Length: 383
Length: 225
Image 1 (cartoon, rainbow over the protein chains, first blue to last red):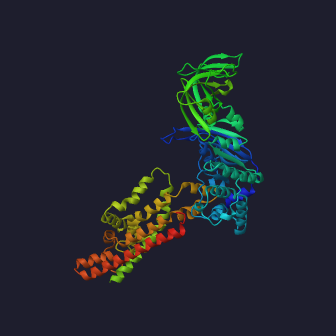
Image 2: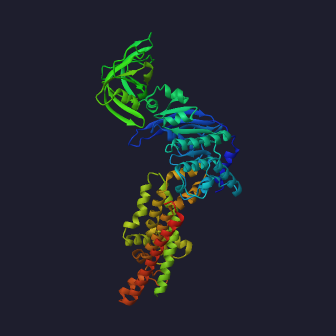
Image 3: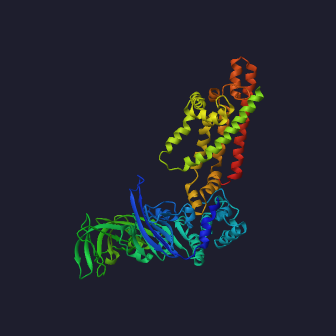
């Protein structure tokens, strides 16, 4: 029992602003159902502030967090905050989860259902004296706006309030780093923004590295100065959200970055002087002019096109700079909020986003013949 | 005579239930949380008394505590007495016989506690000990209560094991169920009848108390449900 307070006292002693460096290698056995086995191998260092860890489900995001928190053991690697190693396979260091002082917010939050909000928040402070414990809990509750909920149970408060309580519970122990596993996915935008503002304000004072896992691209744009992209256990991109998502080179990023259309093409010709290549969409006679790219032109390439980057014309357009004008006909139209989603058959099916106004003024409907117009630079070569 | 058997039976049942809690809590927690491959063997052993005839279990316990077995000889060398046909021997046999009735509800209740709660407890700096008492035990408490009462009631009503290893010694090993059997054998139906009625009423009262308590305690302690 005497060791209960280790995490807290270590956190107290720690200089707040220290980088979290992670190098994790781990072989994940397939669960049999969805994924086959996966070799996780990532290496990154993050400073104080938000860093996004982005990737599809099954890419290994949660396993990375679990390894950092000490809930899973890597096969090899090194995890450290500043100079203090939490795990080092070479030196045989492997601190238990409870002595790592890493805050971890699960997607499910995992609030203790049989405890009040106050008991939840004070759970990690058992080594402190009553007065200090109350002081700390009161302070953190104040900064997350949950002081009025102290005597309620988790089942008696709203979803947004639960997020705040879970955050407060993790942060009140003054962790050396904070891991967030898609904790805000279920919340509406306003609530989410407010919570993130409170978290930012907290971190302005405490300056710890915050690793935020998500697969929602809205969150990537809203949150991060920096985004790491994980695919099949490897980091495949690292940069600002704009850099990573606007020029996606990898298919997983492309899907996540909003490429509704991904077509497989063979390169027919390269035009170095024009800065373009001609590609033919596999199984069709449709050609696309795409930006010149240093890819292996003997192998099929994948081209990503956002549905919102495609123009629609009901007459064959002329005098355009856009190089790709493709004839087709509408297969189906459906409306989602204020976006009309059209599926257009051009030999290969394309998804096109329109406004309801455009649909009405052009008189679009199933079977309607039209032309799709795509700029060369709206065609993104994916790897 | 009835009172003597009744007191002995209650003493046995209380003692056995308490011992089973001391065994069942850690064993149940281990069964619920261990990822050891060979766990199923332990689960099978724990469940054996459910399917074995009490006479089989009683016979093996009797052999094990008898003067010819290593355990029996060791016990004799330490205490100078034998376990067979004594109250202590009865306690030992009953603990084994009622083991699954304590362990299974406890293990099931502990296993149903969300693992994420245990993980979060660890990341908040809690030891396994603290996690157990603050999270696993209170959330699994209905199962613990069930395990306690089931092992109590099961011990109260056991017959075959007691007969095999305890014999029929008034004041030492004669429990209520043995007394009833004994009286019926001697054609004393009126005493058998009264004894049986006492046992019936006692069990009914206990179970009523348990279910009443469970309803109330859920309401008081587990308001989120």
